[in-house]
Length: 436
Image (cartoon, helix red, strand yellow):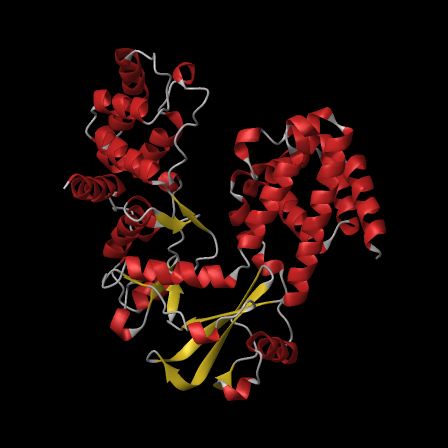
């Protein structure tokens, strides 16, 4: 389809099916959630849902698959963009074996037989414009012979780039035609969406993220970070040490390999807390979803997904560490002072009023029975609910939502895991090292 005609067709459908819904679902402070919230609103109306189903074939494959999954699974509307994309990975068909071999050879720029003694052309995993293959090197590199290769599907990646360009073009025209679109900065939202999505496919950056995290946790007996095979990393292929793993959710499989679940659950809490608040460099969704079943690393967490990383500035990290420590100790005076020092409240805010407000909001967390307390709730409170709206400084944003504000598989692994006291201990240790 000619590019100009595609652009006009996409603009027509954007206007016909209610671009105004996109604007209404895009509060400026929520960035990428506008697309997911749009589908959630559409799903609430049977007529609107039917209209979207009629629209999908006219949109590109990326938009169609994304919207279809969200219409059929509205619960994804409360997740992040990356969670939603991960949830529709299974809809992406991998390349056939012969095409996979050809794509791998193009990615490495040389025949596979010169690098590998064996390559499985059938991918073990297929994701969003990518697929993963197991292979065996002809000669060891850094002591490794068994490797796995993440391959980008170049054709699909090009198609995604084209569709993102169309999205930005539509946003630009909507801003020209509508004052509401200009007020909501639709072009900026489209550009942010583009940048964030394309970050998922920057394999060289992912390799660097993987390598840095490996250095952060070097010698740590709780986790394994696969080694990067730098000589075999290109723009379209990422090659790393292969580690046999099971999903952390596969409880029967972990039991069969005699993995102790209680320490594993505790290690997840410890590692994700340290990753975010000691190193300040962590996976955007704090994934720790796989466990090694290798004999020499049995039961260790395997951190192997590094496409989307986040970081905390020194000030943000210090606020969360010392603010959480004060909150654990119910020292609301110190917590109020930390908010003032960080510029989260107006300079003329009375300390005793801020302290009283923080106490009122936080004490409910401590009223729960010890087994019902959750570190997730505390971090969420610190990040989102800790500042009275009447006292917030207009020129400063509240602290960013803490990474631990979302539950993972900790209690599914072991219902008795005490996330509250584990996080409290880890943060207290980090705080002591900061002061020392």
